[in-house]
Length: 52
Image (cartoon, rainbow, N blue to C red; front, side):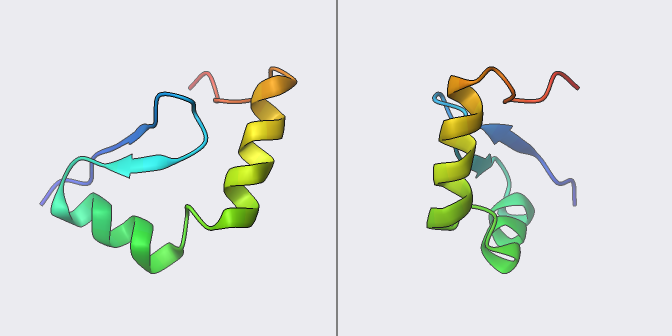
């Protein structure tokens, strides 16, 4: 099964397009409150989302 992930519209959350992607996000807690807040700050400074 293929892992497919995309950034949310505001670039603060990772969204899984497949069941494997959603399970990976949940297992790794990729969208916990602290990291989402950090990504928001990074976005304001132009450091996020990554270009690659």
